[in-house]
Structure formats: structure tokens, C-alpha cells
Amino acid sequence: MKVQKIINNNIVSSTDDNGVEVVIMGRGLGYKIKEGMEIPKSKVEKIFRLDNEDVMDRFKTLLTKLPPEQIQISTEIIQYANQVLNKPLNQNIYITLTDHVNFAIERFQEKLLFTTPLLREVKSFYREEYMIGEYGIALIDRKLGIKLPVDEAASMALHVVNAEYNTAMRDTMHITQLIQQVVGIVAEYFDINPDERSHNYERFITHLKFLAQKIYTNDLLDQEESEFSQMISQMYPEEYVCSQKIQCFIQEEYGHQVSEEEVAYLAVHIKRICLS
Image (tube, rainbow, N blue to C red; front, side, top):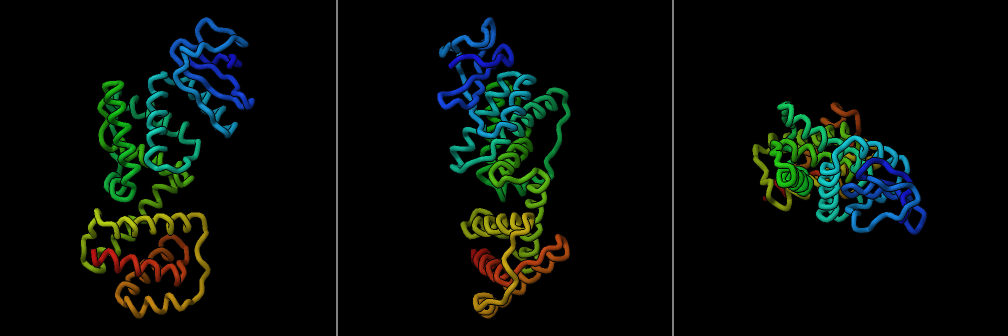
């Protein structure tokens, strides 16, 4: 590959065999090199391929402002996230997570540490994503000698969730709060502390994630009675009443009408976690 543009002493842009723009990073890669020259393979440390042109332009702008060590760290976190989740992530994460890692390090160095109000909820509702966040703060400690607080693992996890579900940070926070509130309704109604380690609890939380996403995308099931909902109301009357309380809460608090079929699905999940 040949140099198309020099971004800084450590980063240049080029094109791959398909004519798609790539950004190449390597210590000293852009030093004493000119456009059109062949890129020395021995200096290449990382090649970024982003399909979205707008994301690529914003990413290149970000690269000019940050130390290469931080860029490498955020890249490794994203690679680890891809391995753990095994699903596509919105490419905006290269911008949002990289920027957040830089901001977190700056705050630490200036002794401006903030807590994450949803730390417990993130650990409970997004276990794999939180594990990725823990990997991130351990990586920063190992490579930079900076020990970020555990709250940063939750913050990084939320950025991964954003990329995973293609949501904005504000919506992700609201979705997390909604899940927290629904779990609270169930716990209070049955006077229980659900076993957060159980498979049934995990399935319930997964169901609530998708329900919350539907609420924020206005993609709820049609409102119609079904034999299924009638059957569940007879089989699990208490759980169904609890599910109706959740339905009323979502209507009053979020202005969304949850369908009777969805109420039935919730009742089934509630029954399962009550038995766990």
C-alpha cells in the first residue's frame, strides 16, 4: 500500500486492494515519508477499515488529537468486545469509546473522578459488557500504569451497549433505568430478591432489554386479545396481575401501551424468576 495522506507522525491513510480508504497506525510511520511512497510493512501496527465514510472522517480527526497509546488501547478493547459478544458493533464505537478513554484518563490525571449512578444495574443487566469494561480498565493499568475506578468499567460497558444495540447514550441510560424499575416492581410485589445469577433472571433481563428497545423505537406488538394471554392469565393469575402493574407503569411513566400479549410474556418470565 502507498501513502495517500499523512495524518501525523504515527498515522497515515491509504487504500486497500478494493480501493477502500484505510487508516494505518505505527510509531514513526508518518515521519520522513511522503505521499505516494510505499508504506513500510515493518512499521505497521494497526490498520483501521471503517465502512462508513462519515465515521472514518470523524475518526481521522480524533486520531490527530490523541496519543497513539490511547488509540491502541481503545482498539484492543473493541477487538475484545467483538470476541466476547460475537456480533456486529456500530462503528461509531471507534469514536465514542476512544474519546471516552481519553476523557477518563484526563479526568484521572486531574483528580476529577466521577461515579456512575447505574454501576450496580450495569453489572447486573449487562454482564458481558461489564466484563469488557473491566478488561478495559485492566488494560489501561497494564499499559499506562493508570488505575481507573470500577465506575469506568460501567461507563465503558455502556458505550459497548450503545454500539451493540445501535442506541444513543441517553436512550441506553433510560433503557437501563426502565429495566431497573420493572425489576423493582416485581421484587416489591412478591417481596423477593431475585437471584441475579440464575438463568431465569438472565432471560428475564434479556426480555426486558428488547421490550425497552421496542418502547424507544415505537415497535411494540399490536394491541389485540389472544388465546395465549387468556391462558397465561388463568395459569399464573398473580404473575399476570404483576405484569399488568408493569403495563400500567410503562403507560403512565413512558406513555407507551404494552400489548396484552406482551403482558402474558412478562408474566411467564416473572413466574420463572419467582421459582428460581
